Length: 207
Image (cartoon, rainbow, N blue to C red; front, side, top):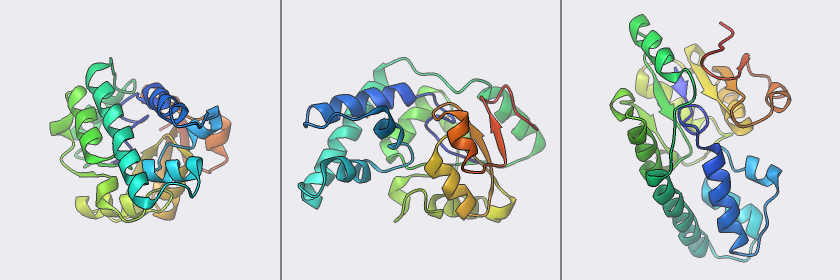
């Protein structure tokens, strides 16, 4: 079982959007709702390059991305956060069935670690592949191929749980099965990407 992080394990969609909106407006870019949705599954550098164009140098872009991730980390440490509904029970069922699991996320390590720690789940996710562990982020399948390899399971025998368009594409490229949760994108948008299953959250699984 391969889990995305934001929007699948931890409900941080609104917080991410608030941070991105504040950060972008301070630099002269006003993101639309679609712009904010498109940040999911992307590294901050990729989003900033799309929004700010070719103006900033690669070095400046890296510094801006670090500033944005640090701002998010600061709020993540203090704002109320919660797990996606039903996650705890679902993990319990996986444990009883002997199913191994891992995290595959585009998040930077400090935010991935803090997210799991805020939920008291860090010790339950021994395998975690983050944006720092891959050369190519979603929709490239690298993050899920590495997570599957770390579990010792062929990717085609894995179920990826995603909430974002780019994540579903990464799962399909890895030849994994995919369950899409409608915690971030509208159901019709996710359905067009062809996930194997669609659900509101872990309380309403179709299998």
